[in-house]
Image (tube, rainbow, N blue to C red; front, side, top):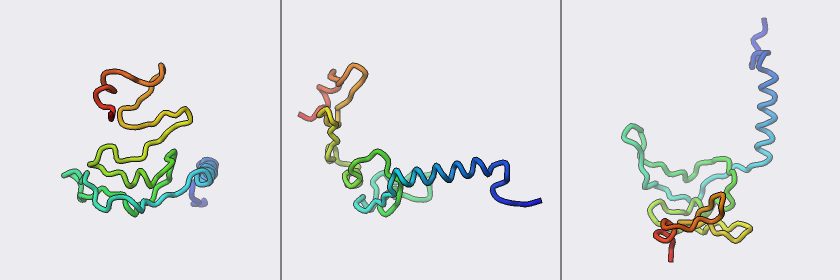
Length: 116
């Protein structure tokens, strides 16, 4: 009896998974955080063995983020410090901006929190 890996009954699934992984790698790029804060203010949980949650120097697959440098440079403790995304309709996705099925939300919350 052959002890191949993966077992024969899973080989079809394994090949499909490999093709999907190759397709995914072709669509999305690996991104290494180079501009992030070296020490995170978020700290860690007392139940964890580390206290720094910084992602500087770590690599991930970037999905649906137009400007990773802006995301990295955003400070955890500083409000309104990012360059905001503006869509094709001219909506800028800033603090206190939101949409629902009826369109742009404009209620008491927006009046209270929108940067004037």
